[in-house]
Image (cartoon, rainbow, N blue to C red; front, side):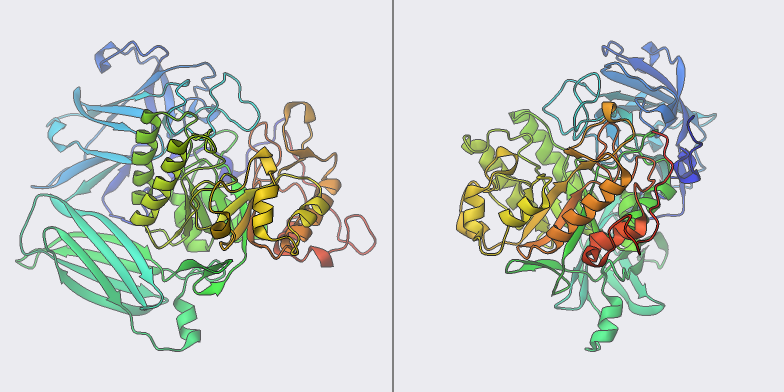
Length: 619
């Protein structure tokens, strides 16, 4: 018998929180909820008039998910959405913007039968000004067409399976709307985008603001920064050509204790709250938004990762970001917050979001609660000119969306040579990885870039190694201190791949992270699950996790690790948590093993050990 879902897992489209947490306005309305819906398996309909909307869907849950009310299992190329809504009253000059958090993969929107805009990319937001298409009386009608060819392997698709049934490490597909749809009322001239950067050396915050809409002269931007109840800055800047680019110097008392209180880190995630106001030449306030930033700096010193100028050992967990009933979409904001809380409670100081660009609300909670994030681009699975065009453009969109989040410490454009399967033999594939590494560093020089995580590295700031050997002693011997790194790079082939393809000596001077390991599966139904290795009981799983982490924490070569994985994900049963986020063994023991206290832990079941907590779980 299936247990009732805990409150945080109950799908609730009304509980998804403000969709754009670093540029927040008061006048917004969610359009999540029930929409008319139609499947168009072969993509035969071209206009809304042709579509027989014959069912309802619960937005923002993808039609493949149970929560959507559709639970489509077969292949389909196109789906259609329709909703009627009342537009808010607009004053003279005000505009109404329709926003989409993410629609997979290519989408077109109509307002009152007027086609307005197309968008391509399944993981990035887009918006359209619908003001001029509104009718004077009665409700408005929005129609969205989403095209997502399930067999197209040349688009960024992450873990979405191309086979009918999910297999191995690939999961159910995600089509159509899967993040919040919302309306926003804005002035004709407005703050369109902003980007925060921080400098620890200069004790300053960088701010770049671009306006949108009608051009006006004589505008000023007022910026107020506060943290921990203290006023840090209250400045006003003249806009030039609709832009402001400023470094806001903060008062530096030169006392480490005080400085440390204002520096963001997972153990103390201090945020700086920001209020931005746009003022006209006659002294009228035109626009106002809320935002936040932080003083935080990442980098490397020799072979160590450093956070805020100090060596920092990364303890990451790989997170696929799926929920059993809602797929890629979190059931609600509480579920995203709880995932951050759980990762920290398990002893981790960061996550590697794997093959998914996560909802901005997750990054908001990681910023606020203190959790580092590796952000990784979902992969295509073919190397073609079309794949190159798509991934490059969409990766820039991803960085544009998320560059201001303090939690993000690394960008990962490629994983395990997915999308570039012939790196060792095809120079053009190596050139693309190198080009995207340098492009990423050009767009954001404040973070580390892992060009191709796992193996076959050609350009990177960190060397990521994926090694799923289930024997801790073999792991210890393979990376023992007396073996030089160039020798490891040339000799060892986890996954049967070379770790480094070029310039071994340069790579040997970089920090090394064991960025995938573990993958130990424990599940009640072994016939329907997959893992890199298996355990028969919860006690065995706890013992093996503790033994493996004891070894990995003790390997001085590594500046950090990333354990696979946070939760079970459908048939992949190698999570530390079940898919409903229930721990597979005692959370306190898990925390101690992750942090490196496992050598002081009593073995499970021995005299003096705390009782095993084996949660009830309905597979």
